[in-house]
Length: 453
Image (tube, rainbow, N blue to C red; front, side, top):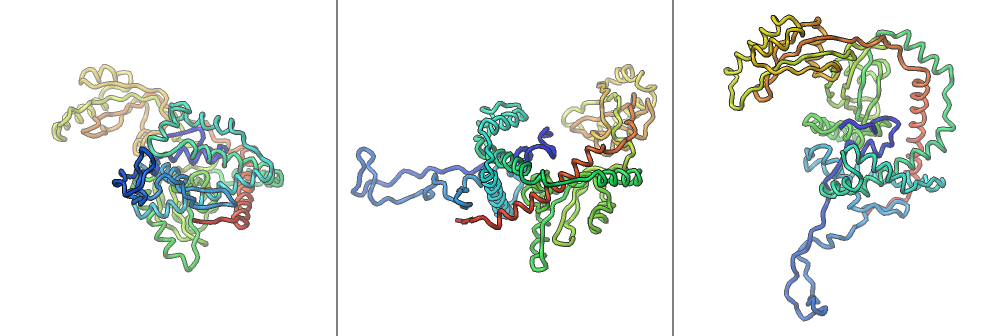
């Protein structure tokens, strides 16, 4: 789901929650007690020698950690686990669950420290603010706050878990604004130097990359690599990269799902640069050893510096398609494929598409606002190479139908002017604030009294 909250300025709680969402622990009821053995409690006839037949104290919230006196319960962890499980459509193997639960606990400890630090600085987050953010978030699921809370309960999570994340992120953001941002400086000379470097590197290749980084020492390198390999296997099986980055990555970009933004190869460590140069869009790397640990990269996009990207072009298309009846074989579909292919070559462009489609019994659908980059990669390259009026070869499946696309028009993107002064200033400032915030959080961890149970 694409949400407006997926931005660097949105509270990380909302970012984290958007990618994650629910299935939690439930309390089991004990079976009926045995017949009385000499004891009673009025009409309840409860025996004195109680013998539990179900889970011991199933409904008692036992503390998993106490952080400076604040309790984190097993239920807190299970509700967060539920969000991750749903985000990954349940594709988390049992051996991964133990490590995932430990990471969730670490996240909850950090969140508690952030809330406590804000309270210590007399920063108060009003409940109405949290409720407002929560209601806005629920709208992304086409539900109001009450409906969304009910939905979370049905899948095993709770509104309290999400609201706690919102509270933590709002508190941490405001603490940074008060105690970190005022002391971060970016000079005009630094911004100007970056603009000059961008102009000098016009046409150079840039990459939009996401990263998961796990630290390692020589002693832990083998186990760290094995852990990263398990993460790669889960990602290849369809798990959410953003969700795993937020939960496991030790880089500062974990808060934004591992997104490094647009970078050039020379800005990356040598091993990562070598991988980026050979990765196509959509590819996932194997674990890459770098100084201090291991990284996994996801290649999200590519472009040239200060050069308009042809994939930003907007196309006007007509689609001619056949619906294939259930049970049809590929051999039976072949005549349809041939008719579509011939029609695409002989219909005389978009002006003749409707008549040509009617002649062969095909359905026609038109769209004038199709961005090239929103299409599958194979179609992107194909359509960018077509002239107005030309059609693609037939494509599709027996199950989903076969079709061709006819290019009726193309609006190319304007020449790129590059990021503005304000964009560069904000990026530099944000990076420095983030580094200081990470050091601040490390100090909070160091000074905290955490009692794990």
